[in-house]
Length: 331
Image (tube, rainbow, N blue to C red):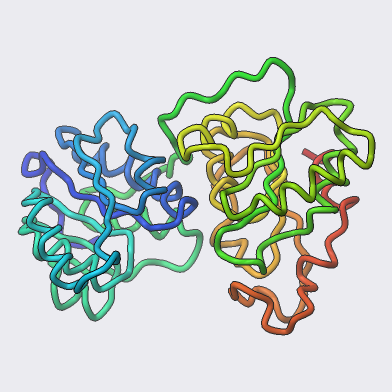
C-alpha cells in the first residue's frame, strides 16, 4: 500500500486511458474500484478516439477528451496546452506508461497524481508504483490499491455501459482482425470453416475494422463457395459504440486476441480466443465464465511482435479449425 488519499478530499478524478481498445476495456475493473473508493467523485476521461468512444458512457463520466497531441506540431507544447484545457482535478491516474501522460498529469495542476513506476513518473508525479506481474487487469487495479485504505477484495468483471444489440436469432460473431499486427491474425479460410460448421445453428456476423475489409471479404467469399448465405459482413461498417453493442448481443464469439475479444468479456459472451504471439496469461479474457483459449506451445511464442520475425507464423498457422470447433463444444 502507498499513501492513502482520503475519500472526502476527492470529488474529481482525471483518468488517462490506454490507447488500444482492449487495454482500455481492461481498465474498467480499476475504474469501478476507483469509483468505490471515491464515491463522491466524477470522472474526466482522456484517451484515444477508440478508448473514449467505448468508455465515455460511464454514468460518472462528466467529461471525455480525445488526446490528439501527437497530430502535428510540437507535442510537448500541445501537451502543455491540452493539460491547461483539462485543468486541475483532485486526483489523476494514468494507465499509460508514457512520458507525455506523466507530463499531462503534472501540467494539469492536479493535486495528487499516480502512475506505474518509471523515470518520468518518479520525476514528475506524486506516486509512482511498481505493479505486480500478471494479468493487465490486476496491474491496473493495483495502481488504485496504492491510494486506497483497503485492497480490492474481489476484482470485478470488465464492464461497458453500452446497451447490447438484440438479435432475433442465435448469432455467432467471428473476428478475423487484430489491429496490433498480422502476427495476431488467424486465417480467413479457417474462420470460414468454423463459421460453416455452425451455420445451421447460428446466424453469422463477420466483424472487422476499416483496414480489415479484405480479410472479411475473403471469409464472405469462402462461405458463399460453401453454399452458406446466412451471414452479414459488418467489417468497416460499425462505429465503436455499435461494434460493442453488436458484440454484446452475440450468442457465441470466435476471435483473435484483440480489442473485440475484451468487449465480449465485458458482456460475458461465450468466446473462444485464438492466441499466437501474445501473452495469454496477461491479456486473455478477464473472468468470462464461458471462455476458452486455443493456442500451441511452441519455442518462439510468445514473441510479442507485430509480424512474425521468423516468417513462418507457425504459432497461428498450426492451429486448425477442428481445434477451435472442439473448444466451442467444450464450452
